[in-house]
Length: 397
Image (cartoon, rainbow, N blue to C red; front, side, top):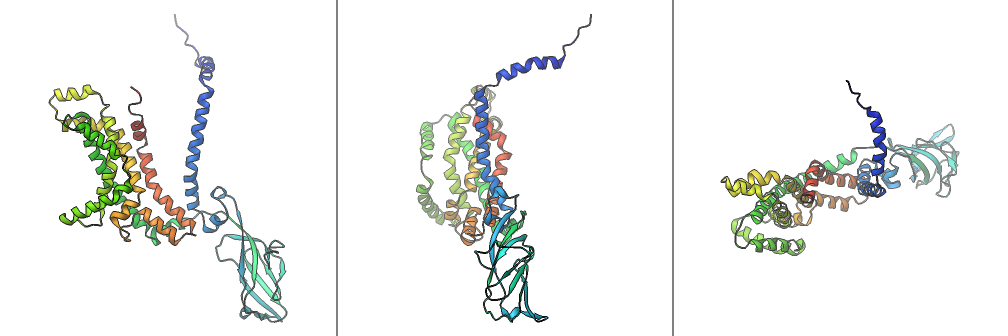
């Protein structure tokens, strides 16, 4: 006798109330809170990215959240002197434009004084205090006429309110990457960060395995020393490390300023935390695996390369992210061990120069700042799944 299969839509309808019953108000509140903090942390980056594509005039008068809306600016332009006049049918005329070609502005109102700025619409006529009348069109073109010759030697000002249409541009990035040496500084930062990160992670992995699974005298002392070194401020140890490096370097013939020194400094300052975190991860690996490998005759090096390293990829990725971000955003160590020469300045140092020489060019500063964070963002999102697994390692047995 054939059996009739239950209807799936009916079962789904019956299970829907049970699923709704499992939704707790507390869980909804938690998810909303997480969403709020995610948006809160993302907004500055989004604002920086949007601002980097805006024109200087747009940044000066409106915030990034109004990037898609027209903005109104109020400015003044000086009119030509009397030498620019021509006589046409007994009338003296001065022609010109208060706007530069391609300025992306449309004049709405104008006035011959700041107090009368909004009295005359574009296309209307206003009286100039030095004589004559001026007609200003919406595209910025003006015609200034007078029945008598102009005699002024200093051009009066005309005040106008113009609508600025939103427009995205790549000129900010082109200027920053070519005219200000940021491209070279970007390469310098990569040259510093990549080797220092890779060497730090590898040395920390070897040391963490030794402190976790190898038995030798003084192991507890080394573990305590690693924890103690984590509390030493970088600024406190920087000068002694630099003096020691210079003394040893003078004996071995190592130059005082160069990439080798900054690599050693970043490795030294990053190892305590890396060793501590990796040691806590590796010591939590199953003991049975290690004992089985030893019974099969594997050496410590074989166990480390064949078992520990593959199992520790999440932790290694987490340490690599932390170390890379710290080195990439560093300025102090790079200035001390590399100097301030233009061919060795890292990206953070170049952005400081931009802030000093172009303090009013916010469009260039935002473009330079976003260039500096795009690499850390790529590193983080590229290793995100390993990063999350490394943070959660050991939380669930």
